[in-house]
Image 1 (spheres, one colour):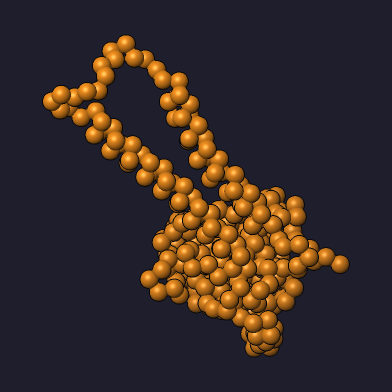
Image 2 (cartoon, rainbow, N blue to C red):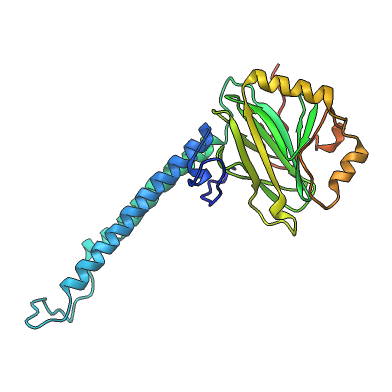
Length: 277
């Protein structure tokens, strides 16, 4: 399930935080949750501060203090109701829309075919494979604007998290599992992605870029990769598995056995995504 996170990641938005500069429907929905939750918590903090000030002023020690002296006072039923009801109300206002929105953004839009991208976390690089297009890249990927993106995530390394802050929340990439992450870019641009889960000495270098381009430009990019890039062989794949960083690369084809054909984990359709007939 998508994890909604607030981070200090900057990319392509000046002095703003990237997570506060959404460029897709998933990121916008998550930003709305952040904003609404912040408002509710701000109201709680303001209420507590005001109540604290009133209490300090009302019960301060001063000459001629007229506060009633009640040594036998034990409880106030209406106060207990308020102290119980207000936290429950605040939790409900935060929890209900959060759960609803979290499940909503974990589902692909109906009647829209996604671009399926198989992602493998390696030490210390990211391998992207496009099964329909038959190409692969390392540490970068081009995607069409306005098209749902279904990232199917796994790992051939320690567990990582896949995160593109301006497109949406993060999801785990784990060995032996294939987990889904639905994102979408509604504006052309280059969006930084990385791992938000410490995974070893090369963790800081696990950075990739998502290039969101027009659909025609995306088709042109696929054609160029097919014609101008070398094939990824099993030997080349084993070299990628070795510890170390890698510059961005592209491959015109790749062996099918480099990505799991079945999963023991949860996916949107209960298994590997298949194109509808």
